[in-house]
Length: 95
Image (cartoon, rainbow, N blue to C red; front, side, top):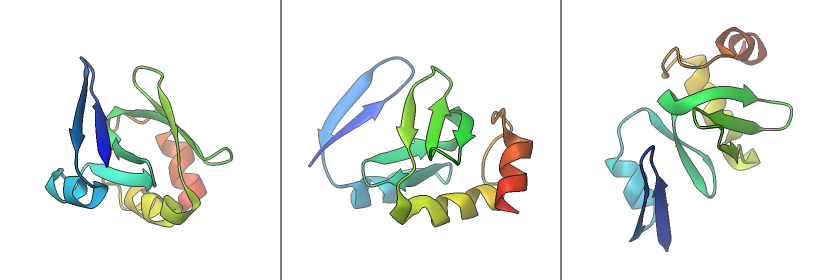
């Protein structure tokens, strides 16, 4: 499977599986969709109604139904930085 890493400066491509990749990433990377692993420190907004995540460069991705509970549990336990603009809103939704 081809995996594409989107970074602030460029994209990198490799052939691997999400399972192998996720095992090598730091704790602030969380799978939120069958096609996405996100860096929590780059999130600026989370829309729980549309299940959409917005990042610092205004890129977006979706939260998949299979991964939503785990993703929300990570947020609930505050394993992310204060970069999240909607931090208070997220805490109210999850609580």
